Image 1: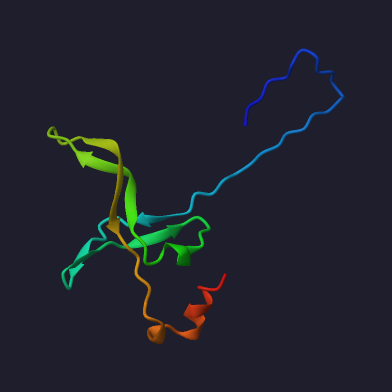
Image 2: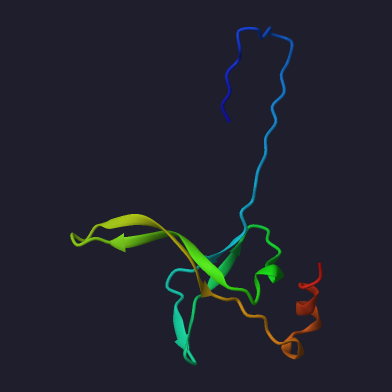
Length: 108
């Protein structure tokens, strides 16, 4: 937090500071989590932030974030990527295979 005090401020009058925070929930791809099974590529993910995760299920998802690339000289560089096309999906487990406790997570 940083602020400046204007020339009209008089010591003893007090002041007000208002702060805010926004959370950007997302699914973070875990490092080295790629698996291929039954003709599908699977990525391990972890929840970040406080999301309504059931709203992410069974819909097309893009991919964005920071990747680390190895350069020809052996060094590492960072790049930002954003793929707007659907490249991923988090499928729900069919209801008859879910426990009653798991189904509670889908209530709003």
